[in-house]
Image 1: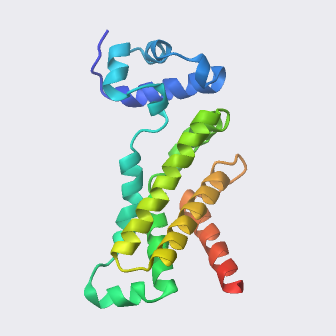
Image 2: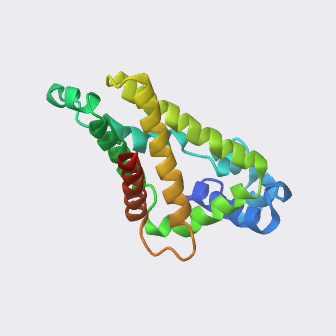
Length: 199
């Protein structure tokens, strides 16, 4: 059996996800995932440390899509405008969300919905997902602080951005939702801004 085949990691992810959904996360072994993908256990461990990592790979890449948007225009002429106004900070957060939207094209919707159902059915996976998003918020806040945003504003903006992402993601994976991820996220972000303005 060939062990180094193109797309092996993707085959393992897809096989694992299908097994997790039909039999539950705890009811599936690494050997069964590898067999379902037509690969060996040794190949599985070349890509993933354990079966949980199938659902949580590429954390650094996930964060980077947000951080690239937060980096924004670092030109000195715009720096004071950004850090000196709530609107400027929220523009950075929106840019971060727009960058992250590229991770969720239409062809990824069904996979994302299936992954979320598996996570929702398992407390340990839910905890891991919350840690991932909490870490993202902390990292985003750190970047904003490095750009000169005060600590409270940076924390609120970062946490708000992650909240918008979570809400938009939940809407996007709903079976009846026709809009693309970017459109959904933009709508949720605007609702947040309306709520802030009303306050």
